[in-house]
Length: 177
Image (cartoon, rainbow, N blue to C red; front, side, top):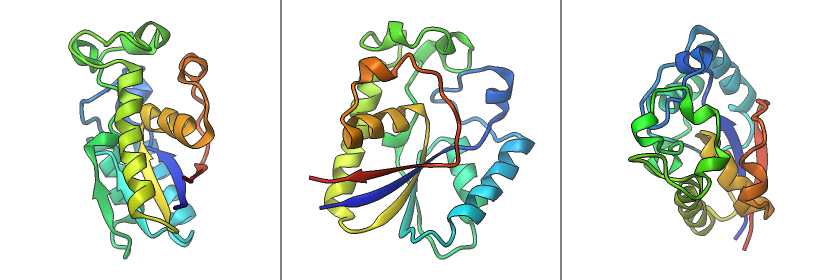
């Protein structure tokens, strides 16, 4: 059971530009984010993708709809692909400052990064079982990419959590038994 996964982060949101950690709030794409979403569609529309899975949060759904709306690709929303739940800190800048402190300790009223990665890992396990031989696109958040690094590449979350995020036009992973 092998699945090729192309991961793309949701496009730039208004909150990203303002230095706010949206968390489980929907968020909206900025003008630059909408343009980046269009570029994503151009880049991936003829890339052998069978299906697009996206977080159900507004900024990820908006990215998928701009990129692939009107195409034959099915768009499937899945709440397991959400960002880490910052709880009471959703919509503030605070979660951006010290992710390491919340590696195993949940944000007040939310979840820890390890819990978020485990949630996404459940989605990836299901993907491995149900999409054998397919190339799929996943649009998500930091928690999604971290889970892919842990599950597909065997990386340790403890080492990844403090690293800065550097955007690039997609990451590719292979999910195998």
